Length: 119
Image (cartoon, rainbow, N blue to C red):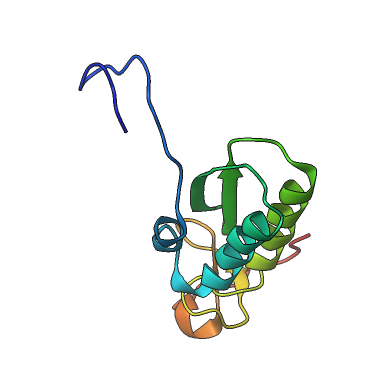
């Protein structure tokens, strides 16, 4: 990231996430989902940068710099899958209550109850 002032940047040049940075942004259990999106971008030669990868409300979020119908559908598909995969280990998981929502397997839930009536 570059800026004209260290305290108040007037512009930012941002290169986006590469695969290693994306993988470091969330738990290892979601690595195959992230790899699926990066592979889709490469395979379909989509000119897009991944600008953010994070967990939000218990699910995987991937944001890009452009709108692209096929890529947007793939990201939505992967996000929906993340609600049934433990973020920590990749085992089958469920959305869990707690100080914040997380998708975890029984082993990593640490006693957190599953959220009921998730649509």
